[in-house]
Image (cartoon, rainbow, N blue to C red):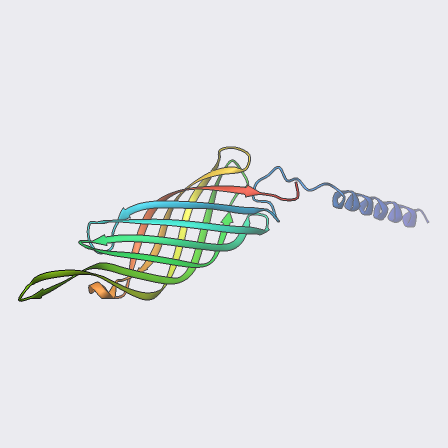
Length: 201
């Protein structure tokens, strides 16, 4: 009888503790909580893939934390590179995923995206005739696919605003119109700003 009573008291105590833990309010003071939104942008400059010209890239994104520290969303990118009088501009959009390793003021993170879009090569076409040389604008479009991965650090500036510093890799499709075929690996340092939004607060 005493054993049964002791067993009942132990089970009742464990049940009460478990219920109390379930009833505790969720701590939303930490960043990257489930059901919060993250929106921001990042940009960078680096040596181009075709020559010593600079390549500039800008990324805009919006994502949603499906669980703590893991967000999925949509990203859009614009890259521009010059080669003499020609200009290669790529615009793409696609799904993205971002994982924060910690929920601290300084938090390392990993981000990746697979995007589809269009690249446009524009320049000047020269035409020589007996009467002289004439010029005209020349533009050619091509569909592209591009992968993007970045590893970086996120620093909280104020409660909801953070700065990102990251090293990115991107496989950039070559401009076949200019004689550059295949994919080119592009490494770039980027700086970004993002904002965390929790509508339930």
